[in-house]
Image 1 (cartoon, rainbow, N blue to C red):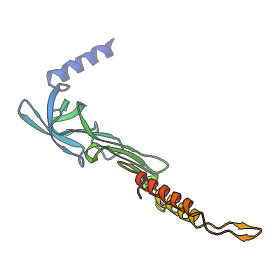
Image 2 (image 1 turned 90 degrees about the vertical axis):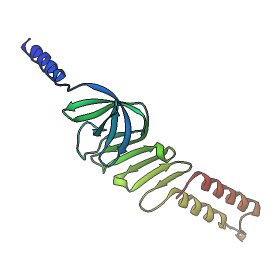
Image 3 (image 1 turned 180 degrees about the vertical axis):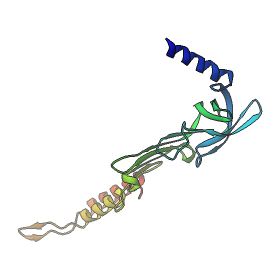
Image 4 (image 1 turned 135 degrees about the vertical axis):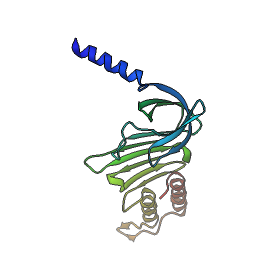
Amino acid sequence: MKGAAELKELIKSLNDRGIGDILLATVKKVDEGTCSCKVTVDGMEIVNVRLKAVKDEKPSLKIFPKEGSDVLIQRITDGDYMVVMMTEQVKVVWEMDGSPPPASLTIDGKSGGKVLLHADGGSTKIEMDTKVRVRNQIYGLLELIHEFIDICKDEIHMTNAGPTVSLNPANKVLFTVLKEKFSKLLKN
C-alpha cells in the first residue's frame, strides 16, 4: 500500500499549504475575454479567478456567473483560484472543436435569454430570442418563405382552354396574411 500512503501524504501536504481550500465568495466583475472574474471573500478582493480549469484558448464549456452572486472558489496554487460552483449564471458558451468545422452554442441571459447556435465554423446560424433566425452564408429561411409565397401568389396554371387568370383575390389575401405570420415568427 505504498501508493495509498504516498497519496495520503500528498493530500495532507497540499492541505497544510492551504491548497484545495474552498471559499465562499461574491462575484464583483466578470471578464468574458479572459474567462475570469474578480471576487471578494470576507472583504478581501481576489482577481483573475478562473472560470474554466485550464488557461488556454481551446474550445470548451464556459459558464459566466452573475455579478453580485455567490460562488465557491478553490485554491489551485498560491494566489491561483478557480470557480467550482456558482449560484447564478448569466451566460453559457459551449464551443466544440474538430471535424467538421467547429460549432458553438451560446445562451445569453444578459440579452433577454438569446440562444445562438453556430455550425460549420460559423457560416450556419440559428438564433432565437423573440423571433427565430435560420441562416447560412447564402440564404435566410424567412426570405425563402417570402419568395415562395410571392411565387405562389403570382402563379398561373395552364389548362386546355389556355392559361388561368391570376389567383382568387381571397387567396391572395390569405397568402399575404401567411407571409405576415411568418414575419412575426422568423427574422432574417
